Structures are given as structure tokens and as C-alpha cells.
Length: 266
Image (cartoon, rainbow, N blue to C red; front, side, top):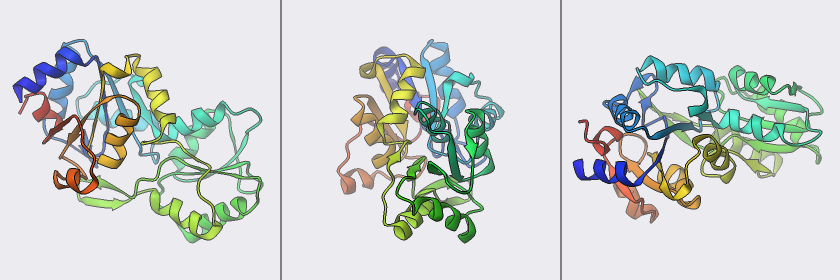
């Protein structure tokens, strides 16, 4: 893959990496991911890490990256939870929010000075919550059953990879609310939507034509990049398989076994 490495370093200025399945699986780092990022740092390339995982704060997940030996400034890290809070903070008069998600997702909204409420919410925000329950579902439902409450999903990932295999994603919680309310989300922020891409491009500061997305899910990461006019590299270290390219009819610009392979460090 030496030729691919040379091609990328010559033509790409900004590199956007998904995390789950690309840089890590659960708590375990993907082999040679650190070395791949080191190659880009040495070449003075712009790097941004973007994850749909909204169950942990941006700071918490950034520390996980640092623990793997991958240095990362706060401005080089973006989660769908943070992006959702940022986007909603730009809406005038929106203050009362119910978060059906983890305590860390609630923390992201508190950092933007939202009032977190259980009744009379102006918006219900849904994120990954490993403590998901009928009780939590009912509180969100009661708010959304009113016509004047906005339904917001941090993302709709059906599953995500861990070091012990796959687990259900936030899409399960979103689908449960869709089913009982008869409503689709008014807003989905995370990949493959444009909201989080616009925020990401503002952070990385490169031109779209010279920016590349590395991801392991074709209809999430790769479609996200394609819709935004970015180059794409599909890696096989996470959720997706090579056969999915034909099955889904989604053709990335490049395919690599891992980010380490793409940059010739393994």
C-alpha cells in the first residue's frame, strides 16, 4: 500500500477518522492506528476524529484516544452528542430539553446551558444509553406526544463494534420512539447528515475536495463523505465487509484492510 500512502499524502490535506471500528473497538485500539496518525502528524496534515457515539462526552472520548498514545487537541475531536448540543444552542428560544440518553450526554447539554427537564420539553434528544428502559421511553414519549415538541436524534446507528463483538446502537431507541409516537425525527444530526459535516469542516479548515473520510460503514461514513464532496476510504477493521460494496452499491474511492494498511505502517 506504499503507493496509496504516497498518493494520499500528495493529494489530501485533511483526514477525518471515524473511531469505532477504525481507530478502536471498544477499549482496544485497532493495531497500527497510532502509527498511521503519526505519519500524518509528521507530514503536517490536518486531522479530525468524528464519532457518532453520543453516550460519552467529547472530553471523555478524547482522553480514550490519548490513552492509546494518539495525541489530540480538543478542536480535533467531534461527537454527535456535542454536535447536537452545539446545533440546538444556535436555535433562538430553545432552552428546555429532555435528553433520553446517558449522563454524559446530559453533561454536554448542561455545558451549553440548556435546562434539562422531564416535562414540557421543547425538544427530546435521543442518544445511545446502555441503561435504556421502559421508564425512560415513557418520559420521552409523553413529551413527544405533544405536537409542539421537537424530536431530535443524535444519530441512527443500528449497531456499533466493541472489543467483544457488536452491540445495539442508538437507532434502537430512536425506532422505539418512532413506533409509539408515529413520528419520524424532525432532526438527525450525526453521520451521514450534513449538520455534523458542516461542523466538522469548520473545525478541520481544509477544502472539501482535498479532505478524506476514513470509515467502516458504507451507508454511514462513506455516504456521508460522498454527499459532502469529500474523498472516501472504506476500512475493513470494523462493521463492514468487502462484499457490502456490491450488496449496497456504494463505491468508495479507496478500500483498505485498516488505516495502518492504508499508510503502509503494517
